[in-house]
Length: 238
Image 1 (cartoon, one colour):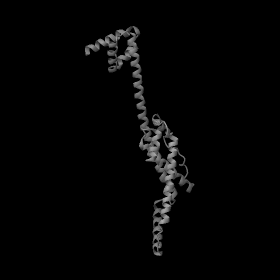
Image 2 (image 1 turned 90 degrees about the vertical axis):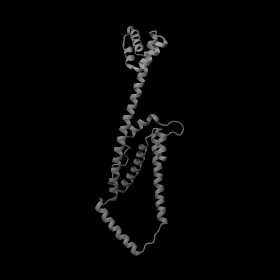
Image 3 (image 1 turned 45 degrees about the vertical axis):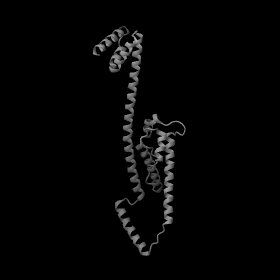
Image 4 (image 1 turned 180 degrees about the horizontal axis):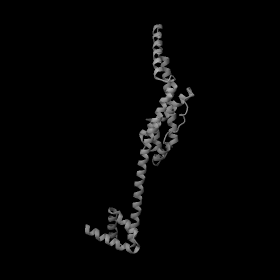
């Protein structure tokens, strides 16, 4: 929850909760990959990979970035989240070590022998079902998880980008329409129409935008005649 709040301050109130969960999972997987690479030098090539589609997603949410006192940038929020996750891992490790110190069960020779035999059997099963190197096995698992995250984030980024482009198109069309209306009304006033005639013409333009475009496309000498005919036709329909 703290991680979600951290990035919510960065991306604003429209933050996609699923995106933040994926970023948190990515940071945890990156830490796991680093551990694997430190233990086994053959497991190379994953640590340091940038979060997929990070720039695309940041651009989509860029319009809603929080501002004011206490607001954070994207990089700062992710950095704080990495520190928080690292601190959680340290606390978990401390808890495990503390429990290990407290719980010191007494085992008899027979039970020790029995456990030893069981471990040998388990090791045989593990060898049959794995590569024999637990770090390489972990590397393969993490690699699969990273690919899954990349695919999921890619789908999310494409979907949100399409939505953002659609919204931009709507805003652009509305802005263009508003500019045409302003031009048409100014033209009516220049042509000497009364206030009532201007209002009636504006109502027609709202219902039939093509009439407004036609007015602006006509030569100046024909515009007044065109408006008079348009108002007369509208009066007949009413």
